[in-house]
Amino acid sequence: MNPGSKQKDARATELIAHEAAQFIAREAGTESLITVTRAQSVAHGDRVLVFVSVFPIEKARAALNFLERQREAFSDHLKKHARMRLPRIDFMLDNGEQLGEPAKS
Image (cartoon, rainbow, N blue to C red):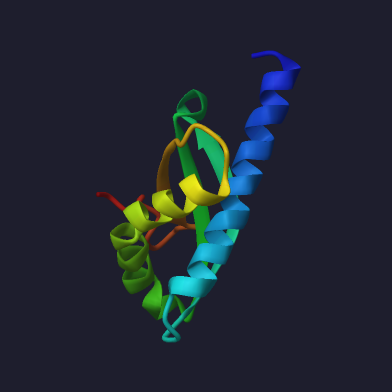
């Protein structure tokens, strides 16, 4: 992968993390605080993992289930706000010792 491609990939994951944070802030309820901590591109950019922290931790499973249900709505949000080829988005609990599996569709 050439340096320009790596830089473009980094910008894309940063944009996805930023848009995910905005989307979650707008759509999530008030039972827990869901914070996007980072995004990571995998599978040559075909997939992006969006890592979130959840407070209180007891609400983490419910938060991941919410994000799983909202995956299509988030993709629609990205289509409107980002001019890029859309990768598959998976949400994961950051430092997910307890619930670190990706939300599955």
